[in-house]
Image (tube, rainbow, N blue to C red; front, side):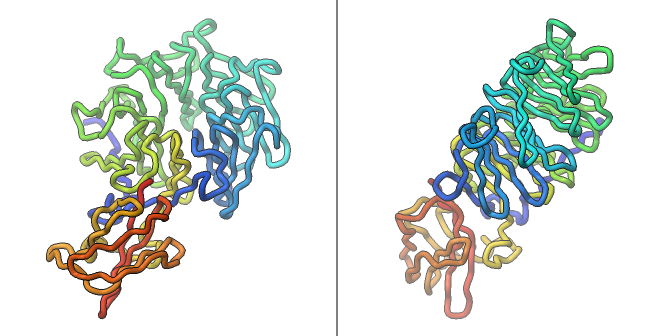
Length: 417
């Protein structure tokens, strides 16, 4: 049996009915300083600094405040950000753009490299891997580039046996071995002399396009594909495939893969939200089950503090928050003491409140709070009468409380757009 590490995302599962209690803190152009709801890239800096690459600029979220950078207000060469990476142990940020090439920002000075002033083969930087300040790997539509100080090395199909020029994903092993995922040409590894290549034609790989690569502690490579589902490549170069044909994965289109410090993993789906796989069960965290505003994940980051950040195509930025951090909610399955339906719900709809098992309707008072503890609505809870959710509430996560003569019970309520 191959040594496959199947990873349980315990940071997200805090009760047997986790998906019903999961929720997000949302950042969008309507409630924050983020410049665009289209988020393509994320990177974690020091001191809980979060870099956010959007379609119309770069943003820094620090201590609850936003700082935005655009080509008109800074040395950023292009507002359409495609990739981000922070130097290990440093403060400098590397930025890959759609049309403006590569940039480095050290907090005060911007440096820019493009096809006009350097050997960079293409101004579209699809992926960045920074080993340290002087060694930066770049995936482009025109090949793989390595920047070592002032020296550049470029691999393409014309000057090497790299199997394809369009490189959306780069992964560097701890020993320095580079791996690249290509568009339509499989996955390749540089062995010091040339490129070893695995494709549909010469292996059990089921999709020749590899959008993201991540390695677990057992040595397996997790590969994100746009049509073949999740592929796990073992150290023996065998391929295990999990698709809608042979598993309960909700979709075969995967955009991003990430691991937290305890080596628990997540899949960012192209159109199916966030997915957890524990080796047996697939758990979906999407707009239907948790109120994620957009199921089209474009960026996924597990920060050093294990917090999970999701960038979406049009939904902005979402931050996963454990439910027990909000208003002192108990660390037990909340549905065991209070049931509200439907949940998620939309503003203006009617909320039914009952006690699971008995179906008894609470008599007392219903109260709706935001995450800061401010009461936004209250209404008597009478047998057979629902709680009216106000029409003017924004999408997001709220706390519903049923206040009875002898106790007050709370649960999370997600409002959909």
